[in-house]
Image 1 (cartoon, rainbow, N blue to C red):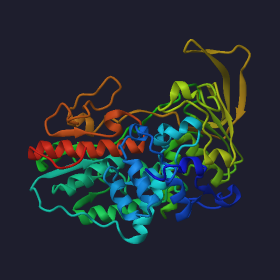
Image 2 (cartoon, rainbow, N blue to C red):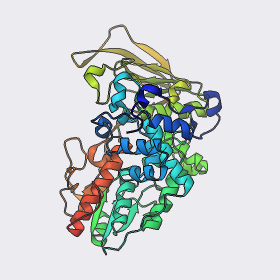
Image 3 (cartoon, helix red, strand yellow):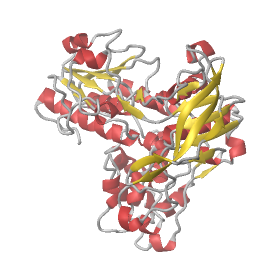
Image 4 (cartoon, rainbow, N blue to C red):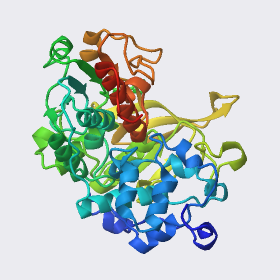
Amino acid sequence: MGKATGFLEVERKDRGYLKPQDRLKNWNEFVVPMDAQQLRDQAARCMNCGIPFCHNGCPVNNIIPDWNHLVYESDWKNALEVLHSTNNFPEFTGRVCPAPCEASCTLNIQDSPVTIKSIECAIVDKGWEEGWIVPQLAARKTGKSVAVVGSGPAGLACAQQLARAGHSVTLFEKNDRMGGLLRYGIPDFKMEKHLINRRLVQMEAEGVSYRTSTEVGVQVSLDSLRENFDAVVLSGGAEKARPLEIPGFELQGVRFAMEFLTQQNKRNAGDDELRAAPRGSLTATGKHVVVIGGGDTGSDCVGTSNRQGAASVTQLEIMPRPPEKEAKALSWPHWPLKLRTSSSHEEGCERDWSVVTKRAIGSNGQLTALECVRVEWIDGKMQEIPGSEFTLQADLVLLAMGFVGPNTPGMIEQAGVELDARGNVRADTNSYATSEDGIFACGDMRRGQSLIVWAIREGRQCARAVDLHLMGATDLPR
């Protein structure tokens, strides 16, 4: 793969960023791509490692060494074909995936993995630029129809695969635009939404029909879908946010992260304030913002707050500060525990670990501060440290502590499907079938909060299972 001695001759290089003072002025993507020769050099670093652990690290099982080699040979079109054989939307994963493939790369043993994510993104971006990405029409129609409920990455992948198998697919979305988490959960500065729009155009040409502003279980009953479609796929995601159950939780100024992020994405899409923020505008402008939760959603809140002109931004995490570097002998080729600093953190943010919020303080119903305490972890159990209490000034608190499962009222209740111990829809990863005949589930609604790349994998595999259920045989890849 690549050049036999490439990993010895070429140092790792990745895409760069515009300077913070420049990128904070707008909501555009700010990654600076590498040129074709730089990408070819980086692809040359993909060594003949014998066992490509990157395959195991990648949830969609991308055939990484093969398309790296094709980029090294400047055969971009065939590289795109190999990339698309496992991943419907590499322009999404090439921008927002945390790249577990790079963590698994053999060269990561010495902290210099191949820049897989950047090469992946470059391949698909070139494919769009050259006009190589076109609708893939089914050779014949099967006469079967499928309703896919939820247009996030799992639903999009499932719908596209089923349409390519010849089924009539209708994609239902409760929001006013297609895309789910991709559309309203991810800030534009990480992934601009025209990337979703052009895929929707492709999918529509392939035969997928769209029903926006249609919440199944509210505007349309689940029973009506079962009556009018041969199969139903539940791909609605895990939207039930973990609450912060402390005194003062009800104060004006304590809000969930997803509401904050969605409002700004709607503004960026051109919506007026009434449409973007029907419950009232939620902005960080001039405020002291505290983000509770140290994950990607919290990081997105930091970047959005800085662009809105927050007076200060602080991010709190309940877990201890991770080490700067992982213990390779213990973690590789698995996803390592180590400190990760995002581009949003670099734009301006105070970060604090091992902190628990005890109480929200307010005046006249408006938040003014947070009472916190430091904790230590002993034998896996959290203990407060006596005398470590402190107070943070706060005008806006954004709760980004993850999601505990799908919303069950409405669609899931009407479906009557069994749930697992965590409250997700019960289905295995072979048949993706729920306890109700003809109803399938995939993505975060089935597995719980996870990565976009896992959602794409489950959407593809679920499509294969549905095709097999309807036709008795399938040519769709797993």
